[in-house]
Length: 430
Image (cartoon, rainbow, N blue to C red):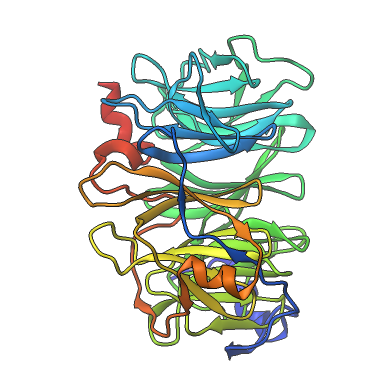
């Protein structure tokens, strides 16, 4: 088997990589203030089944809401009440701010995916994108370009498009230019003046990068997700036939390296407390919370069972656990950089965790037969009396087996198509 160039680079220098660290269990964090949070409070007047995706824009929280049938409009939330947005497309996702407006992909009235813009008042569809359908993975690149992927109606497969509109306001159409076409394109992320992505042809992945003039292949055999930029470097979860799925890092040029001693299957990379936190396979083959300080990985033992949806709220890292509205063995776990605290309540199946205005918002149910409703956990005075009134208990000591549940989106049980991903929703177009 031919070893990809990026893998050969890693095998040759991994022992000398400055980012490599020894795996540690437990460990201490930097001094961290601890905030006490209230028990979940239901938001009166919120629509049922708040939804599958969210974004904060111009001081408001925008969320999708299941409104019956195939209707999943966006609604705005100001911290106390929701507002219906006239003209909202269905199932908005892939949000990005471009030219001061919110851009995203959504379903039109005919069940076809289009790119939309929203200025806080009006939705505008970017129709006739070279007659390509199903735009997704929107990324803003250098020189104010908007990159996105979409089906190629002429050659088949998926095409990476770039549009050049510096200073141009969307007025019904985007003049887009094809950068490259492959069987599939995933993991778009902008870093160091390039848009990086994984292209698949005949089931063989290759790492590539593009700008507004060229597209280059960096190495074959490596498949990477989008990842994020942290401390001036691009961190991604990548996999190949040689090393499996680990944390990789790109600092300069196109030299991508597997970080030594990375745990298996890292996901939900989240900056917090000056470190990079994520979920991965623990030492006991359960899902565990890890941190990475740039040199050392720390596995935090004593965490919750089936953790998911890492969300930073103020000085606290929150996550759901249990992931079931069919049982009472679930809730929200709070991590302050040193220890876990479990919050159990009568609300179950917590999903779509969102940080907004210093509080945690999420969907949950009181009974498995009920529709999902909207809830909030807010900071309170961290006194002993306040702590006792929240129902917060000591942290759990057991951890779970690896689950294939959530990595960036929750299936809301009982809502059918509510949380289906883009490609799964294509049936709506027919």
